Amino acid sequence: MIDKSSELPPAGPLRWRDVVETPAVLIDLDIVERNIRRCQDQCDRLGVAIRPHIKTHKLPLLARAQLAAGAIGITAQKIGEAEVMADAGIDDILITYNIVGDHKLARLRRLADRCRLTVVADSAAVVDGLARTFASAKDEIGVLVECDTGMNRCGVLTPEEALALARQVASSAGLRFAGLMTYPAPGHGNAACEWLDNAASLIRSAGIDTHTLSSGGTPDLYAMQHHPSLTEYRPGSYIYNDRSLVTAGACTVEDCALTVLTTVISSPAHGRAIVDAGTKVLTSDLFGMSGYGMVLERPDSTVISLNEEHGRIEYTSELPPAVGDLLRIVPNHACVVSNMVDSVHLIRGEHYVQAEPVAARGRIT
Ligand SMILES: Cc1ncc(COP(=O)(O)O)c(C=O)c1O
Image (tube, rainbow, N blue to C red; front, side, top):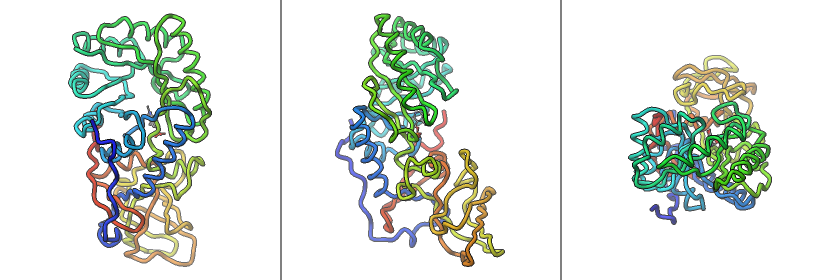
């Protein structure tokens, strides 16, 4: 059981610009706390429980803060992420990813012995694997049927398929049908709830209890209407936000908690500067936009291209950045940046807090 009173650490006496070596990932805890609070308030208004996706931050410290603010549990994408969180004492975890293969299923079974685990499935083959693994388990494992409500990723395509899979789960020893889960396409969060509602009605009319209806995604979080049947929401990126969410109108630049701190290492020609962050920190994720991030100190500039260790910035004003200047870049997509560094640097405004190991970094299996 985690300590529900977990608080994030306070500011220290030093300024981050005096201690952090670049390139580095900075996380502003003042903004994180605001984002957690705003999301919790919105979910309270909607009458849904929050089960935040920790793939964004991969930090037990922040998972604990989300739980302390009212989350009912966490979501992880991979068994490895869930193992790290269970090691940190987090005891209610949903893995929103089909678990396929005997080795992974054996890990899942071991993990289920040390936390309350729920998984998803979108095919008879995935349910078969889970049933084989949990038939002899002491406790049943909860299974949500994943539904494709327009994302064109995983998920059953119709409520009738959801019913067929619910029947298979409900009749398998070791498995408990827990409900339905979807990850809607951005802009379709409300329509996705109607899809889930129809499927749940069909399943209930077949006499199968359907407890959980789980949706998620930050882009639609603040545009969601009240859906009486929705029980939980899984936002991930809201804790940091990023350039894609600013562009989508889901937050402002002031809501972006994660920035990449870089140093100008060359100012070779007017209009062009080179910083020490390339794809190894910012990643090459464009997320449908042009440019690789937003430079906070230089709104006149574009991160026009990246090599592995070089970032090329083009600017329009007369004032060139000087070699040695520190620039902070809001990346296009914060979740992938978290996976690039061993530690992030926690800050509060101008103050340094501490370095924090990204415990679930690289846990891709
Ligand atoms: C299954 C699932 N749920 C929830 C989320 C969180 O979405 P977001 O980061 O948009 O809040 C993701 C993100 O990829 C996801 O894949």
